[in-house]
Image (cartoon, rainbow, N blue to C red; front, side, top):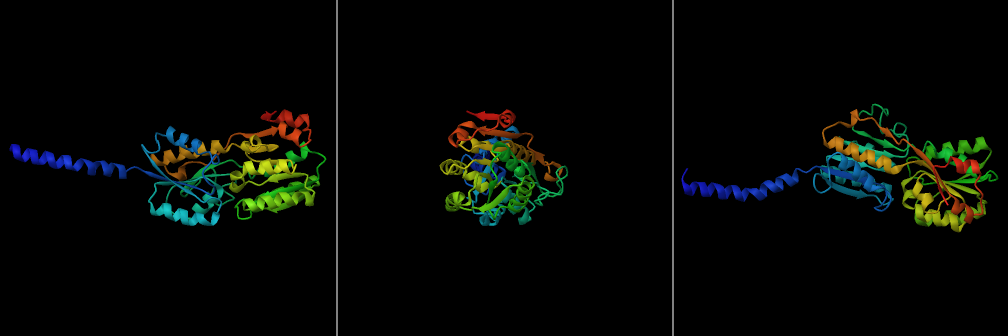
Length: 325
């Protein structure tokens, strides 16, 4: 080869390097992260990223993540999913029950990993927990299934209380099942249960203002991402209006709520991150069984009990996984 031809070939190869680098960048897989809430302490995004990292994927290095947040407006979810489909994401992480239900309804072929507080079979997300089939699988905290247990625990903690309220978000996919379960539990215990609705911060203010008129003695908060986004506000309102309240997540009790009882949401996000990594490594959702959070925790805030003038029975305190004093 002549020297001039070699130099020309080398120069052409050098000019191609930026194009090769851009092609490699374009080849990076994209994960669509979809949630019905807003960015913040909830949901526990760090747990999701940790699971993804354990599978060899670091955001910005091995994988790109497109975040989409409905900010409590569940009607926005179909458009957000359509946007992710247009972006040609490799997998969708639908990390809330409304997001998972919307992803299923969108009927895309994109592998989808969900987290949910409900029963994935009852919600129509999968055909069975052990053999999901289709393009969806994920993790469940089964917090809807223990909603009635939260009411029972509150009754045990305040045995003199007879007038209860259940706070629900009407558009939520778990609302109907949870209302039925809690109403049945209340009837079995001989309690009166008022089902109250809130879908906005203004609704929350109105609901708490109405509790005194209804003579509500204890409040059970429904399993909905909207309430998770408002955990701190709900805890403050419960203290201000002197209403004992119970929710599904530990963060509620830490924020000043009286009690929490439910599966660990961070654990389900960790599983979701692992499953997304496994999908990126070539596995199929149909072959990955739905995982259930392994531990349901009872947490009691005795500081809040004291502020409310309550004495929680010792047998309830003894059963708690954590006591805040």
